[in-house]
Length: 478
Ligand code: ADP
Ligand code: ZN
Ligand code: MG
Image 1 (cartoon, rainbow, N blue to C red):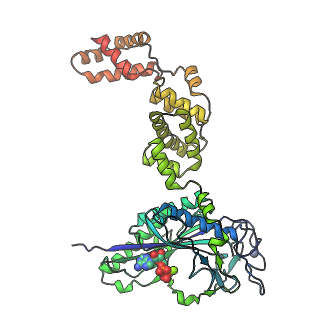
Image 2: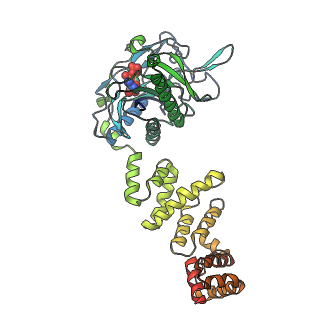
Image 3: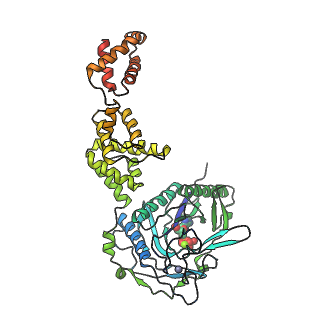
């Protein structure tokens, strides 16, 4: 019998905060500045005698994330925002950290507790980002533009059990940060970085030895790296070599699609954390109007999901498309306001999330038409003035050449010809031209009639109502 292994995953996620200035100095926060070492000053370059001054905006950003995840879960209120908080020095030597320590937070983070998408949050704290290093064969170049940029770190409880859920949580957090406007949170650019902590165990009551996986540049890589690591550990267990699973930091190699050992994991004692003596501890409930910050949070992803479900009753899958694309969602809401009818709104949602987004994948020129023109298209379709084939054709036109679908349909003779007399004439012509088919039909093969419907549709440029055509044919052949 195959043995079962229980997977445990906890995440540590860093996100660069969207602020004007760096965390402890007045330098511009622009880690992607094209020329290296432009946004630097004696403070972020660690010259002797300089003093750090915390950036209040960065602290406020982290508080707003804390309030947002408190609001979504059971932890309602301001309870997860610390009464007081402080910075600590995390000591280690590396050229990308000019002081020889990083100012971070250890014992008293800004946020403790909260929930997001079914995952328990341990803490959220603030620290400073490191410089970026560019390694080449014979040298390493260091760009300090990023050194001292405010960096939020969120740590989850070890309560995630699949690779898919780990990636899903990452996506959910990214979306939340973007809704709050606190971070661009682009994984590819390194504005958001996900570190996996992962262990497996044959006993659900005992954690296995955990490894940490770094250098992951996308959510799909989060999933792939976790799957790889679970597989590697299983393989070691199965071979009786579980002793080789050691607490270590591993890197993710995107080319080889595998993890590799980087270094054995230091534990917190190695960092010799101690309170940053140059920054007094700070009292968050006094420094900030927490109630006001909470009341002024924008609509969050989950609230939007709930609202779309209530107001528009569209498919969950469609709702996700809108939740992940805020411009599209705003546009769609204006369309809904015009249509003002559940059935029409459902049709509109369908045409946007499947047809329009489908067109966009292959045609980079495609743009959303005006709200009015799109609503008009849905009206024509919903009132049977055009059929769905024509609607899709017109959509294809208006996404590159925005115009009134009604006028377009009139000019191109696409409005459904639901005039029975006119249709009868066309039907009779087709009947006369197809004696063999008529014979088959009269011999009892009813399905052959559909080929005549097809011919009539073609003859009328697709503008006939197919149901009506079928009825007319039957009537003429009776
Ligand atoms: P460390 O001191 O090694 O940094 P922490 O206790 O701070 O460890 O936890 C770091 C992350 O690892 C957290 O996200 C936590 O949920 C996760 N974690 C802790 N133990 C395990 C485990 N046995 N398996 C998987 N993840 C774990
Ligand atoms: Zn500076
Ligand atoms: Mg830790």
